[in-house]
Length: 230
Image (tube, rainbow, N blue to C red; front, top):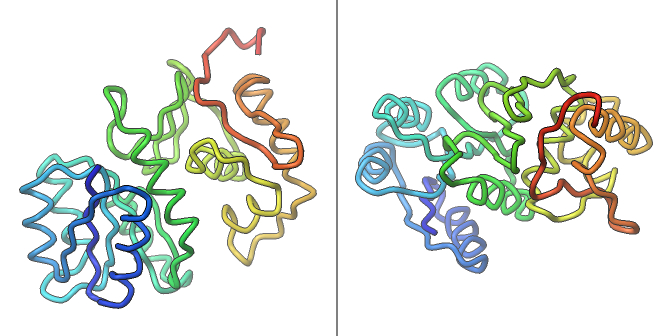
């Protein structure tokens, strides 16, 4: 599968490219906005890693133009600060799948790339993660189980999303806290099992597996069933 990496910092781009190539992906690189726009329009990519601060044309403008052209590939935006809330909101509106904070956490980036690439298929719309009858829209933050729109709290959604992008890798409670919540959150590892239990009540007891000694893992195929049988 081919990934488009859009980053004008040559050292960071080289680091991310090595990471993705070692994971088995083919990588094309662009270093400015016009080049990225053209490459995205010319070739189908499984996913894009995008720096918003590009010369020539900023990354969010590139993203908006891709979406306006009907392109739905997942786009992971790299951001330099958690305080850029306005920019993050603009990126979500433009069609970003997710944001990652610089300096880049290699394992977290790989989790996101695996998650969005593995979700691609006939039932995927590029910005969605699909696990059987479960569908997570990473732009609108909505979750469906079969035809039913699920009512999840923000905390439940964050935990579910963490497990979904881990692509079958178990995650311990502390890792979920570190990767799913920012430093201002008051969530602790001790609270995670409570929210996991609530998610199981809503999605089905088999939706989230406990891998003893390793943590929680989202099932590959989650089936919808009548509420009374969950």
